[in-house]
Image 1 (cartoon, chains in turn blue, cyan):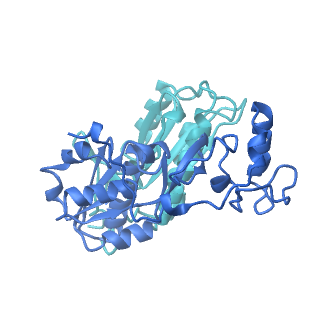
Image 2 (cartoon, one colour):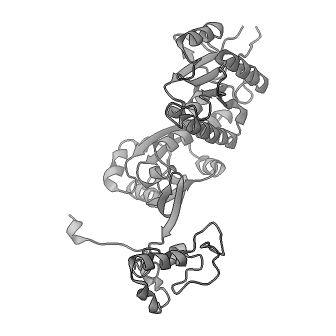
Length: 222
Length: 160
């Protein structure tokens, strides 16, 4: 899922300062799962912003609404007839959600309240890890289900580097050595011989080389 | 006529603590009518940051949470979550310039009773020292003219 964190409240206050009627728009998908932009977080941020406005004697109306998904048109159109009552939308969606709302309602400024971070695995309650870079050319088969690009600090396609200690990365001892995990997994599940090939440098053209990416599925289209 | 500010607190407490019964509630409400708004809850783990924030936003100068002792929660870890959420809320109110001391969480001590009346009075006193909430009484506004909260037609912010 997509992970995100809330921006500092000073930054949010600075961005919404010119507007008098603001709709806080939460999202019930990824950012709710990572406790950044779900219903509770939207209610808390709205309350905090209302209090800040009262303390500073600002005549600002701050209301809240939540969509199940902010990146899908079918959900965003629920704002039709409501959004025009506001001067701006403060979105607690990911970057995709912010842009989707802005595209469908181009006359209303949509302001991000979150910093979108990465594709994350929920490792534990309150702990999310970046295990995938979304490179567009998955190599997990060769590396025992551990991505050397996302999880090795040096992004080595042909590791290990030899610097790890007790299975921990020398760059950040809190990070498990990805190459140690790769070799352990391939040893356990079979397939260690896959590492006998020399892997060429990663071809990043499938991620960033051709401009913004898109997926077209005609069988899914109307 | 001089307006006199009286602090109002929101008091959230777990009903499972031995002192969380009906008699204690009635005694506090009788003695501190209007100044202490009680929120008995089935488990302190039900408390969310938004409850504390909304209380501060709408009527309270301070919010206090009383929980079971560590390890004494009937639902195992409700009191731990209450503490974490209260701390998150405290950080949030500090980030908007409100005093963090306006949110207090008190855990019971194993084998020792929790004096809800004493807690309420102690917190009222503490809030009296901190002063009126700038949310309810914004800058340059004399106490008593801010956003109040009324319950059954009574003003919670009494002035004399």
